[in-house]
Amino acid sequence: MISMHTETITYFDGDLPLKGFMAFDGKVDHPRPAVLIAPAFRGLDDFARNKALQLAQFGYVALALDMYGEGKVTEDLEEAGKLMAPFYFDRALLQRRALAAFDYLSGYKQVDKTRMGAIGFCFGGLVAIELVRSGAPLKGAVSFHGVLGSSLQGKSAKTVPISPNASGSLLILHGHDDPLVPPSDVLAMQEELNGAGIDWQMHIYGGTTHAFTNPKAKSPENGTLYSEKADRRSWQAMQNYFDELFSP
Image 1 (tube, helix red, strand yellow):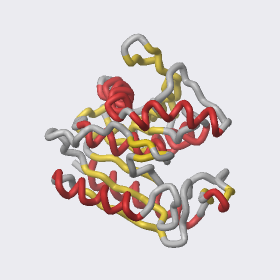
Image 2 (cartoon, helix red, strand yellow):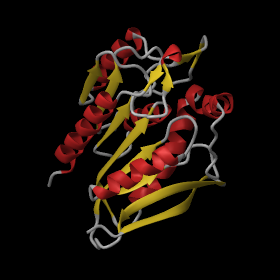
Image 3 (cartoon, helix red, strand yellow):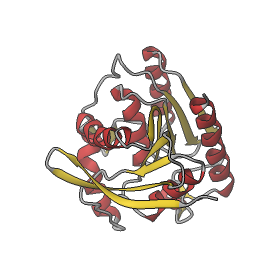
Image 4 (cartoon, one colour):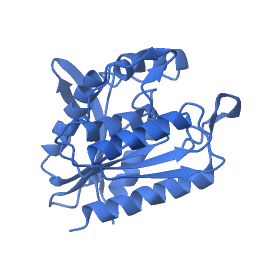
């Protein structure tokens, strides 16, 4: 039976304190695989915490990271967009902030640093992809309905080339009808990953829009709608992926 250990931990990006949420089975005293969770653009909310708890039940050490500092989270969409924008448009900054969490997790005594992964949702899907692109020493990452492009509201992001040290694989879980990710972004991502020799796979769910894992997504007019079927299938795909990656 799992004896769940949960805590809010503090780590740093330079002088900025970041507050993540950690969960794992407290009865297990040997190092085990670990998974970093990158939240959607609202910040480290209950959705991300619940994903950490679910991953801990699989036997992983799970850490939901804090992208904005001091655990900042908002339900206001406009404010969330403003919080996300600096990271979306400056991918070096995004990578540095995500790596701060990765480095903290890899140094945790309960973690087997040779078996680490990451997942992310929406904006967090982009964060998970950028961790692989950064060359961080992780086995692989999973993007759930992640943002795949580098242009937003007519403005282009300052991107970073894929590191020659990038060795992790990618599983991209995408809704075919996601209005935030046009087919051109999907193709560009595939071609870039192929060019860099990244091991990738993509599952595309028909009749599915953005935010398909979030039961609160109920705005089909804005292209965000929960799909029980795609949610279930994508979560199972993630489990199968990590089972393969983390097998001895």
